[in-house]
Length: 52
Image 1 (cartoon, rainbow, N blue to C red):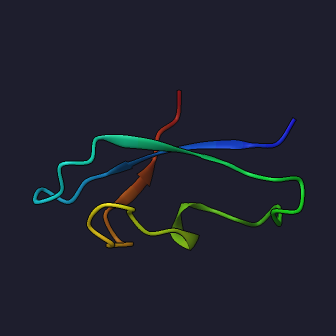
Image 2 (image 1 turned 60 degrees about the vertical axis):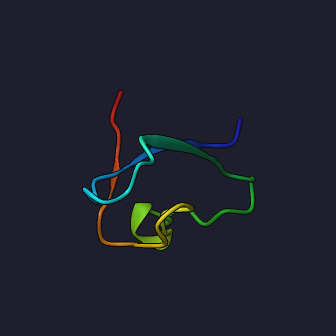
């Protein structure tokens, strides 16, 4: 099964709580949260992986 990554945006001005990224099998193993940006505010630095 492809990997799933839960992410939260910690930008205090952003109202997005969390979102999930569903990878395909072709996604490189070294892909991390740093490779993405918030779909709402567009920032990359405030993104953090949620570990459940």
